[in-house]
Length: 499
Ligand SMILES: Cc1cc2nc3c(=O)[nH]c(=O)nc-3n(C[C@H](O)[C@H](O)[C@H](O)COP(=O)(O)OP(=O)(O)OC[C@H]3O[C@@H](n4cnc5c(N)ncnc54)[C@H](O)[C@@H]3O)c2cc1C
Image (cartoon, rainbow, N blue to C red):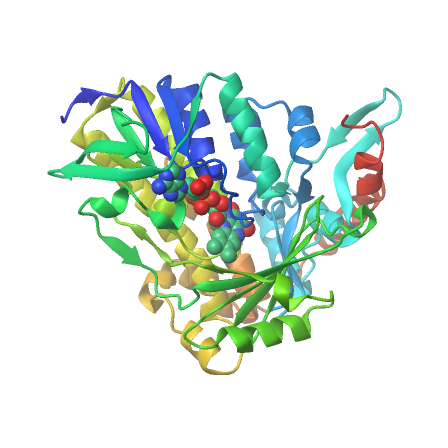
């Protein structure tokens, strides 16, 4: 079967990951795609928050017109992850536009600017202003009635809305959606030989396992599951009413005794969650803390619990089967990486299949598997920094301070300690053909926000020149007055702007 051409693909599982993969393969790799799902079952209402690359997936790779997307999915535009309190550190933001800090002059002035920002903690970006003011990324250009939008933002949405919209697109684009539950998976020598549901079998050159944590296909193949060492495995989720006037366009995070809390605002409601470790807290203890510490009133009877495991299959692709989304792996919900990581992986997959003329051979599988492993490693490293350098008392936080491996994290921490913020460009360029999801500078900024000092900067007897200080101040002022012009959510959704 090695060397067979991929002309038909069956995706088992029509959650968001399965549908995005189906659309991407159809669009980029030019294959015939069928999605099988017991569509009557509701899909999990988690996976609401994304990172900014998702805009590229939806609007460039899949070619979805923005106005249509907005009108159907009704997103909130997420400008940052806003840590209001992280074990005593905070408030601080991880916005999507941190890298665009001007002045973009190389050399001395840039060094001075970064040093000055390190010293003063002034990291105001337009994303930070948008998040804190609760405004949209849109500015009305009065002279011609058009709107300008700021693109360094991601989406937050109801997954039910997104899923319905993705199904509609699949139908439009000739992707067959079959309502069935797959009940039989047979394999032989590491290849899938039969996938069947109640009514029929689904023959295909390539199968995608998109069955979420069920991992229905991949668990039948001899593939090692590499667990991450996070004890986090549970989440309590509740909803609260949310008028548009109170939308916070950011994923708001704070720490708890056994984990951390999220607040994700969508057009439909305010989503509240507590991600915790069942090894360190019973459901009752976590629920009590959740209800006690949230500002909104939470009805305990309405709280939904989710379970997950942290890790990924060593090989994303085995023989004629490939896993996507939660079926492939999951780190944990902090920084909302899952759906966007899946989109990045499937885009790369579709391009590789197209580049290899659809021939399924060992070299292609290895290429893709290496790529997927490097992405998982990058996300896992980034998330673990949040815990390695967290304060926090009690058994849970003690355990979290020893996640990952000091030697492995040294590649991010040592350059920051020895060079401050100034080494990111060179380091990222070395990985030019395989860019990371989170680049070096974001690691450094996070370390700084968590209170980790750079001995290099601390040891410098140095002050930024008045010209640079002045330039930073003027830029901050410009950002503030730009933010003054951004439209409110009521204006965006309460009028005919996107109808
Ligand atoms: C607590 C929590 C919070 C999260 N927060 C985020 C976040 O903020 N951002 C983010 O990007 N991600 C988040 N995630 C991950 C999120 O779940 C995924 O990114 C996203 O929803 C895609 O999931 P999926 O499509 O892989 O799986 P699912 O949504 O679970 O879809 C699997 C589909 O497979 C179908 N299926 C299963 N078995 C069969 C069968 N035998 N036959 C036919 N169909 C079958 C199911 O019906 C379902 O439709 C979170 C996860 C958890 C647990």
